[in-house]
Length: 415
Image 1 (cartoon, rainbow, N blue to C red):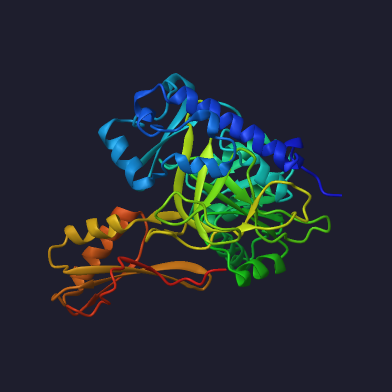
Image 2 (image 1 turned 135 degrees about the vertical axis):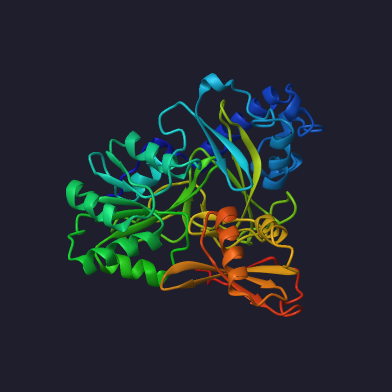
């Protein structure tokens, strides 16, 4: 029999929709009186917000706009009504975009994803997401501790130290990118270290191709994915059927009202049609209303075999814009532009993202008349400083890059 984290997961869909829309109406009514939200709700009749299709009356908030609003009115553009006394931590994500963390237990909502991944109270969790400046490590840390799981705040990298921690604490669960889990397992085999305690993994932040999932599960690790973003925390998560098999798609988190809209607009797409994920999370510390994530997905029809009654999406299907998530970090076309502007020799630049050996890789191709290897090394150093990621730099002749308007070419396979 399938277990559930709480009763919210098995509510009647109509009950869920009514509760979520009631919360939206109350939030819009209250926020409309504030300076920052007033213009966004102009012309919106609160009483007419009865279902998610009605949300199209509210303009979508895009990350680029949010960045500009925060820069003009620090720290949170006035969109966060709570005083900082109600905030526990302050983060920054690439953009830069700034995010607060509330003080309540599991404010990011990830305990639900842990539970669906088969992780239970008392399981020790090795958390390899970063704890520095960005919220990733804390998003997953909070959910594990709320579930009653001790957390090893390992952060990324440093394989030798990670193997020492695994050997000493014997964690049952791993949290991080799937790429790094494979790296750790491979390193354990090469070093003759016992990493067999890891039996469950909750992965996020990078693609999980079927080949990599099959390899990890073939090595005795049950892998499930969580889709989370810094603005709201958990968005959706993978589940299992009563026999323990992976259920297609991802279940939308109970805190999230999710829409699929036509990219570049705020209008909902047709049933099953691929579009951009837009999320709403009503929260007194950081209300998020119709935030465009830039991610592509589609709703799945039919009831989930896992027994949960919420809506499901197909999972991450690429980007609606040219942003790309590389090793768990977003890279924006503006980042490529900043690199190019620091090196006047660069006429044009194009970042190509691929996968090799089950890992994300990126290569910055630049048009320049310079052949000195030191130039490529200097550009690579700038790329690492701007994006916080390492990548190769290739210098090509002027006019060699495709004239297709792409600044970031994501050539990784989808699915």
